[in-house]
Amino acid sequence: QVQLVESGGGLVQAGDSLRLSCVASGRALSSYGMGWFRQAPGKEREFVAGRSVSDGNTRYADSVKGRFTISGDNAKNMVYLQMNSLRPEDTAVYYCAADSSGSWLSVRPRSYEYWGQGTQVTVSS
Image (tube, rainbow, N blue to C red; front, top):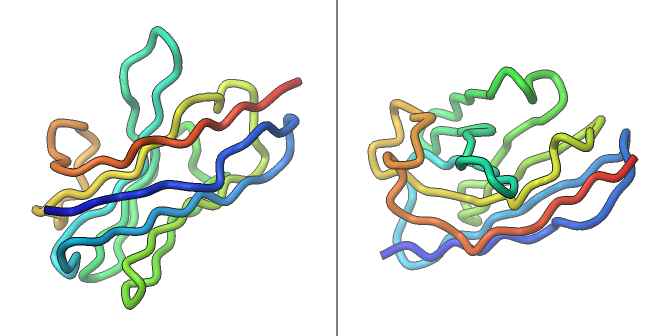
């Protein structure tokens, strides 16, 4: 089993930046894909960004490309999401997720077996 814990959310103004962190424990993640998803009230969970632990390949949703950057420290079982130029529409609960078939970097929540508890990001204007 894998346990994931997110941190770094908060209340910011439009144009500000935040850095989210996720730490994994319980199992080595060398063959996993790590993803960030978000869910706003009344909306379905949405893919934001993904990173393959094995080769470092990344993937982004069009809505965040150029503003958000996913990175990781494999030795520490950490994954990060740097969020710049935040907009009110970025407001959501952000979740860290792990996929044991990480080579595909799937955008589907169903592909991810393990999830963190979420961290709230609120962007005001």
